[in-house]
Image 1 (tube, rainbow, N blue to C red):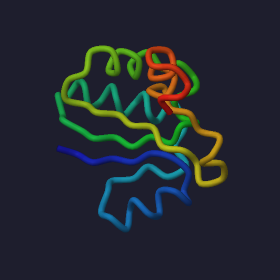
Image 2 (image 1 turned 90 degrees about the vertical axis):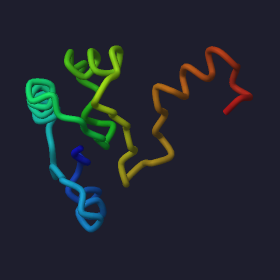
Image 3 (image 1 turned 180 degrees about the vertical axis):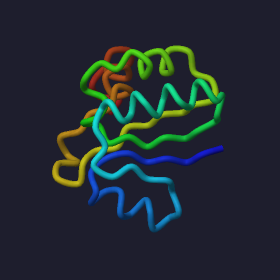
Length: 102
């Protein structure tokens, strides 16, 4: 199983210290290429993705999120504005349980 992190160079520094495979200053197309490669190779992976990479509506990312399986993707906020980040799970919890649940 691969453990991978993609995002800004500053954020990737911390992950690389932990021995995680990193992609500093990644672009959305880099994420798309990586995900397609993982699917083709049938690799298992845990991927930490800085949230700016998921904004462009990458089809393979949406497919992996819907189907689940051997690739687990979690978004992480940027170092610049961690307080501005809201995960997709937050929106689901709010919709189901109400704002007070957060």
